[in-house]
Length: 443
Image (cartoon, rainbow, N blue to C red; front, top):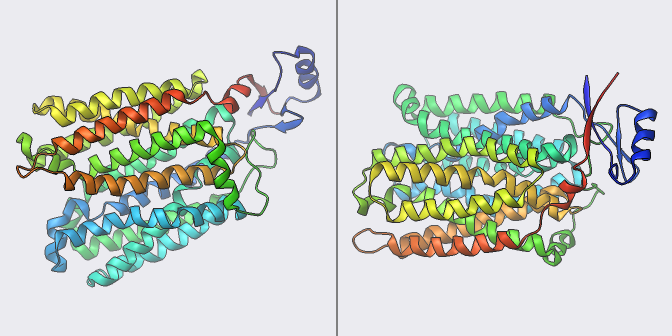
């Protein structure tokens, strides 16, 4: 088997490196701490992937069948839309409790609660599908489970993976969520037509139970030997940890960038169909643009974090992605030609969705030694708050002819501010400090 070992200060102290190699071939050191990777890290990641995907799938269950759902439940399209909106609201409220549980009790406890909530409420949503109030309550329970699923992602990467693999791992977890979004968008209408509302929701409930059992059965907290530096869990969550980040100049700049970029993207994805009405684009064409955004985002979510890990650079990819994203959003805002809109959508998805996991991993690195789930939760939660505000802004500034030129221009200006904030951050020192890595054979 193979283990990745880290030698801090090898470049400046070759003799120390030689001593370490002679003493042991399974571990590395950084500041006197031994590091070694475990093959089981891939099992842990694979166990979590289905839950990441299915959580995002439940978020958009009703969005693609909104007219049919409104007719089935004898309610309004706005009431159906609120089922998806509940995810943003619940994340804002429960993000910090999820981070608190993860920091105090660890990723296994957080995932276990997520699995319990997801299984129970996915089943009740399916078994009680005939009652809209009970479906609303079940959807709210699934929304509450989301931060307990998503917030441990960066901590899982820190517990099990070396520093130069963590952005890739965060990317894989995020891409799993993107796949869940794509599956919901592509399959929900067909499932509804073939199985009906009850059959569709019951099937999703059974899938939740299967994913939850897999997660609980295979998830472990951490290896016996750490894979690299990470924030230590000391049994407490302190608001002081979160407040201390206000003195971290790089983190605060990143927070500004994420608040804007994630909020803008959430608003654009939510208002995708409406923003093209004045361009003469119908709903089917809008759906193709949305699909292009998601598919490109899935590809970007793998390519960009992997390239960042391979090159040992975070800032370069973040700034470049934001710059291209501005041009792509401008194209979506002002162009009318359908092929160009699809192209701009693909670029927007690749560089905004693709850079997302990279940005979140960078945030945990510059926040170190603040616990990973705390720094991640603050970034993600801030994007949910601005997402709601920007959605209201999109529709509040919509012109009588349905044009969204004014709010879209505001979004572009905000993205320029986000890009300037990203330019001012410094490179991840946690990554550069662990740049000297080598493979050794484990007996």
